Amino acid sequence: MTAHSSTGPAPATRVLAAAGAGLLAAGAGTLGWAVLGERRRFQLRQETVRVLPPGARPLRILHVSDLHTVPGQEAKKRFVHSLAALRPDLVLDTGDNLSHMSALPYLLEILDPLFAFPGVYVPGSNCYFAPQPKNPTRYLWRSTAGETRDEAPRLPTEQMHRSFDERGWTGLVNRARRIEVAGTVIDFSGVDDPHLHYDRHPGFPRGHNEPAHVRIGVAHAPYLRTLDRFAADGADVVFAGHTHGGQVCLPGGRALVSNCDLDPAICKGLIDHRGVPVNISQGLGESRFAPVRLFCPPQAVLVTLTD
Image 1: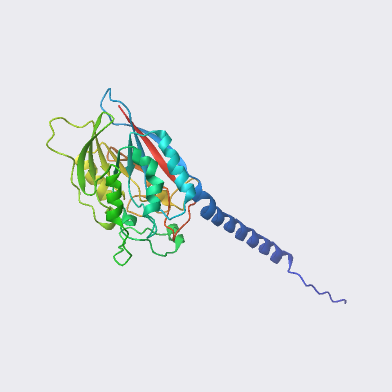
Image 2: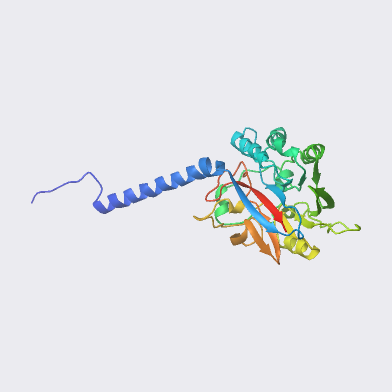
């Protein structure tokens, strides 16, 4: 009998090794796209919402949210600058503007062309506290709803809001205001960040002889209690951000978590809550410690209010 020796793996082992290598390559490719590709694939979503009285002129609102600015994000700056060509009637910023302690000057550079238009804003948690290192894969299994950040470094919130005010935007931090924009009288009700439990609903403006053309609720995080309160107060439409659209999604864009108590299946886009349309932005950025997006590109939203 002749003995035979082999220096390579058995056929089944070779198949398994090849399959494993293929999975690793696919995983590496997906991760590379999530880090380097998807998060720079900026988009503009457009929606039409019929909430104005008959005969009213359409009102075009540019909704930006969750920029999570880090100095040097030139692709993001170019995209935001390009949005000025839309000539919106109003810019609405729903917070989480910063992701770096030194990012405020760069944030103002990014937003500079949009300050040419009337604007309103509310803050998010990353307008108050700097992000902390975290496992980016947490988006695969859990929400961070209700987390506190008392020990995180404080961001220059007051300076940022003062800069916005000096450039003509109006803060809606637990505040109700009536503003006329392009002939449309808008009653705003805005709250501080619900994610941090800073929200104190002011209701809508009172004491005016004539009703507004439209009532708009504005918040960073679309918690159910927040949406419920806006609906109870009589909002015609609500704007929010915070969820990043899930940030890491399944193919087709199905979110795994919402980062609040809203069902992940409805954590982005134009949804209905108790008969009130709610526009939830996927946001234009992500924390610098979780720099990934998958099947969920960054976006701004142009919402046209019509009769």
